[in-house]
Image (cartoon, rainbow, N blue to C red; front, side, top):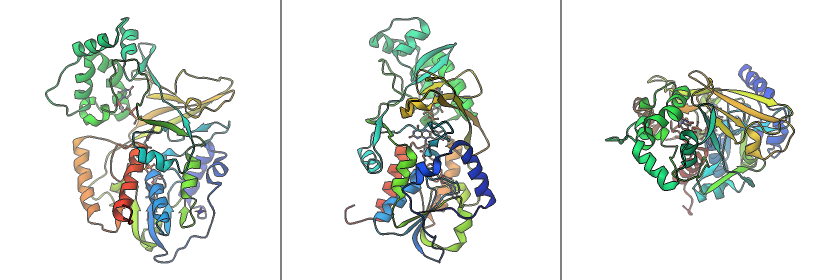
Length: 409
Ligand code: FAD
Ligand code: UDP
């Protein structure tokens, strides 16, 4: 059930921003959500959930299914968190917060989400522009052949990597990961400057986990992900979330910040999926996050803007990548819609920044969180983890199973 409070200033600003991109959002996303008056009595709900992204929405659905009355709030004017999608002014489905491609090896996560959506098979492919030409990324045999004018087979590619790699004593940073797998030249061409743009940091200043997301391949596999399940929700993420939350025991209140309801004691359990440092009023200082500015553009009369879903620009431009949504959604139209991602320090907290000092600061907040028995912290911002969507779904399912066990788990 969905309720929007009467236009507070912040809500109005968020709505105006949203309207610029999402003209048909309400009908497209919320068709299946029923409206109902919000209960505002003390302990009117069993659980208050802060944040309507994957973490909060999965918890809401699971708890409602177990008989709990749930209030789900989000300070934005839509459900779905950063996975939110909508139709732009030209009727093309776009992702306002950057491209979201679903992939997982978890059968449990895939089967769980399949209750709320049909799927469209989609394997993401990425090309990187280096020295004015487009090359497959992650780096594979064809990348080597195209870049260096070689004709290597798989064994030849393996031998090439073996020759150029710079083995490290220990793998601690992202630089260690890249140099030990592809060596200096490929590191400079594909990783060093993309990383500096994306994070404002050198590879050597980031934990190994960042660059470890990108494999190196001897073969010709040019898929970005090799997960068992690679699909996009057939009617978009908005429809998936709307179905997930269309439960009579779930009330959804948008454009509502936690601070608006924190003192009201509407429920005696809280699931919090926002930034953990904000929950504790930045007591130990702000945790660093990386943000992005998204530049959306519709290109008229062009059926295809680029050959694959995403083109990366490691060395050129202030943006890191351009994504063309039609590849992801399979929509047919005369024009096409794209997004450029410009990394920046200030703005919405999109990426936790994986490095040891940040992890230490997070651990101090995590210790405070552990001392709050009625508040449960889950999700990319609350756990300060560079999670993909499927990992967030998995973490939310695990939290509910652990804290609200049923006879079946
Ligand atoms: P979020 O989606 O961030 O949801 C948290 C919600 O909490 C937000 O809606 C926020 O408004 C709300 N909130 C925060 N504080 C408060 C408060 N005080 N009061 C009320 N509400 C509050 N993952 C993939 O698997 N594949 C991809 O291709 C992919 N691409 C990505 C591209 C980009 C540019 C980004 C930034 C992320 C991408 N991800 C991708 C990661 C994915 O977005 C996250 O894993 C997932 O959406 C996180 O879900 P969440 O619920 O933890 O957080
Ligand atoms: N990366 C890079 N060059 C690229 C793509 C990725 O150096 O062309 C590095 C960069 O540090 C990036 C990380 O690999 O932040 C992870 O990339 P991924 O595409 O997984 O990032 P996300 O989609 O989460 O932004």
